[in-house]
Length: 222
Length: 403
Ligand SMILES: Nc1ncnc2c1ncn2[C@@H]1O[C@H](COP(=O)(O)OP(=O)(O)OP(=O)(O)O)[C@@H](O)[C@H]1O
Ligand SMILES: [Mg+2]
Image (cartoon, rainbow over all chains, first blue to last red; front, side):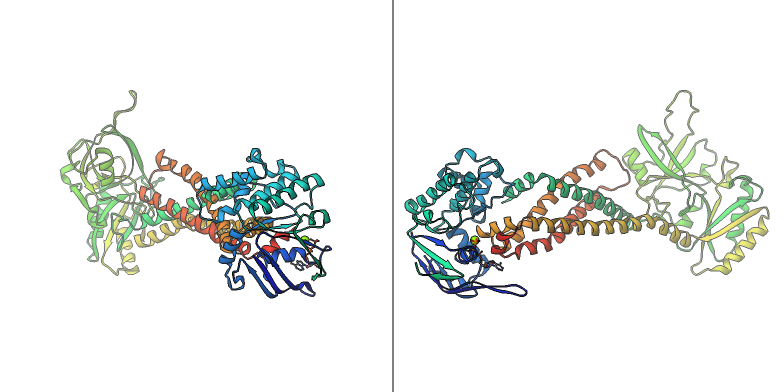
């Protein structure tokens, strides 16, 4: 499902060159659940961005669902992102000016689909995360845990095969974090969604099938 | 997507309202300027109803009088006209008051045949059509036939005839104003003897107004007010030499009078130049304002894009292509313009609907509205193009990290 080979990512700013990742080889099978751990600044988010096609590697290849992504133009990369990947972020990233339902519809806006169908799918996704009663709320009217569940609903509204979660519980207390973790596990087990999740919490990493550790941009043996 | 954007615009009330207000105000200003320009252009290309080339204006004034028309005598005016006509270079000469391009107007108005009408008018002698090349559409011009009548003969413009009677077939009709108050003096009797093509005394910039000539022939006996402009049609190419000879001849003919000679062409130039000043000023101010609006809009949108960097990153993460982001910024602006234009159009169509301003043809109004709408869309989209490109060029990963 996901294959990274010889991936290196270098950030160049005016004066300094930061090697965020180097010599990453990674293979994630369909239905797998991978936790990514490592100290702050070691390149975990960078890895997720590369897998999620939000960024291109400086060296090496990223392959998603067997597609030669490197040769894709922006329009095609965007389509692939839209159809195969769902993102969940530490800081939720909900649009504050939009109601919960409109937030969840977001990925569906970039597909050819009737408005009614969008509504229906977004509503279903919100039911899935247990927020069917909050469709017309604004994000600011929800608790952190609820907001992250909205973000998960948004990530799965388009029924992607891959879920990329960057510290999804990082801003939540442990009870809310457990709820969110439960949802992610559920998606992996019941729907066979491939999950790659960055976490600092060893307890959560245990829920994954396996854990990759990154130290200073390099993959270290498990 | 449209509904999605509508909701966004709706929930961002404060910023949207600000932009809307700016766009609405620009719409009104742009419309005013465009309307002025279109109406002027529309007027400019319409026929004048007379020919000004090779016609000279001769202002006649009695030295004894305090007011311009005091001390004039019909006999003197006839003699002066005859003296001028003796010149071989003079094709024709006739009295009119006020003359074309003169900064003077005479308004009349009343209820005729049950219709309220306002019109511009002038008094003229029997020879004016030859001098000004007036085009008779029906009936005849004034002549000796009109001498004995107790009613004032009148030649009206086509628009006058249509407005009052609904037709140009009005020769012989009574055009006396209805008496509006019991205690007022009975109105002077008037009868229409002819119809001319629409006559625009002020020239190219004058809008469509009704016009009428009343007979004032100095040779036909005494009258209350005599015309004091002699218009002279001269041979093409006549110049200052003839002007001086004419002046000397006139002064010799009636030493008690003073004269002022000026080609109509010259009066026309200065009149039109004066008329174009407000238009040009409006144009410059309008242009300046539009540049300010464009810069302001660009700035606000640029700031808007910066504020929404993370939202843009998020959209990219969820499958929006760079082109989608570009289009979204433009679409949001287009949406606001649509709202502003709808409100503005609703307001300005009241002008023709409520008959607030006369003298604007419906076609000119519609053209101005269309031009303004297109202009504002163009302006807004052009201003949005750069911020939109900026938004589209944001790297998704960077945008998401943006604080
Ligand atoms: N856009 C960028 N420009 C320059 N340097 C960057 C950029 N993004 C990341 N980096 C650098 O790359 C390295 C890896 O960053 P990354 O965000 O992947 O770390 P992380 O493992 O996710 O850390 P954290 O646990 O704090 O989120 C860091 O040193 C960071 O400063
Ligand atoms: Mg990170």
